[in-house]
Image (cartoon, rainbow, N blue to C red; front, side):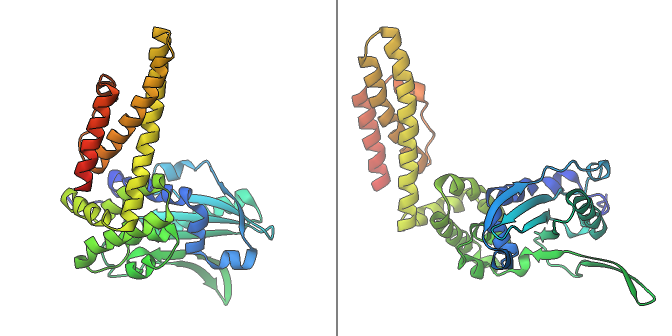
Length: 323
């Protein structure tokens, strides 16, 4: 049965839209610096960011093809306010400039004199045969009665290699969605990991690795190859050490908690001290297992081992990592 172009399948339209919304909400300043670099040049530095939780009218929610915008209000050091509506579209056929115009007017009515700039990011993986309408112009007898425009950002029109030269984390994360030759896919993914390791925290790096894997279409065996290559470089060692340190901290905290519980039950301080010591070794074991892509041994099982047994297990795993 042919697909209804007027109302795209909701599961397909919205499946990956939250990833783009998370990207904008995690990096609102860098998003604006990418989409509108002239804003800070004219208005000064961004001082404050507010995400507008506007109650959408019922017609928007009933439209399965609608991918909700992300309205962001920026406050600059020169006291300028600016609202940017950022909409993500994976399917060009689902986009309607008239719906975007309606929504823009709704926001303008609600927030008065604050300038509102609508932008649409198109993430279609297919090339377009025909461009979209980017302007509504209503003229009669030489008079312009209405004019509406928005900024179109088509990811496939942007060079992945050029984006990798930027230090903007938003643009770096989006690299797999940009333009590159099919045979460059694995190399692009590897370079994206390397670039992100230098601009993101460990938590954000882990979060957006899934984004990179999805849009670069990385298979499990390819992921293992990339990680193996990455860990041979200085950037990979830094990531590995960060993961290891995080594992030690988590393991230590778990050990402290369980050690305290055991100590209270036994009524002796030794239980707490032993719990802390076990926690350190359990953290190392879990970190090594994560790096080696081995199933993680449960904390409860490891707690039943002695400190000496945990030390020997951690050293054996570390030996596998080195060799």
